[in-house]
Length: 124
Image (cartoon, rainbow, N blue to C red):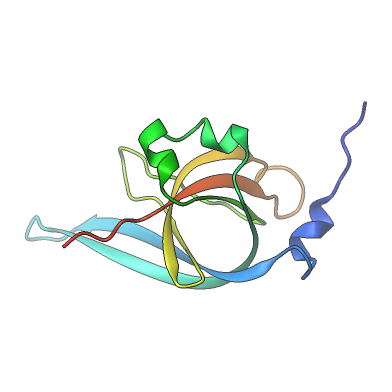
């Protein structure tokens, strides 16, 4: 059975909303200190409740916090050992991109991806 192309839904206002994508990068200065620069961009994405496939990618204790699935027509970068991951801000709440569920950014025009993101917990 062939795949059905539903990529047009990523631009349909009935299924999408405006969110903020914060991309963080770390750099080491000449003094040896690491600094983090964050660049915020307003983007269109579809934010949904996570399904079983997304929940399987986060630790069980994390599933008790807010978890969302994000469909975005571009690349999202999860946190990795070599750097900081992206943060999406939805309704004023910050969610850290935890893992990519599907990455189709190299296929077709702009491509898209589906990621699972976990709410950041503020600590004092």
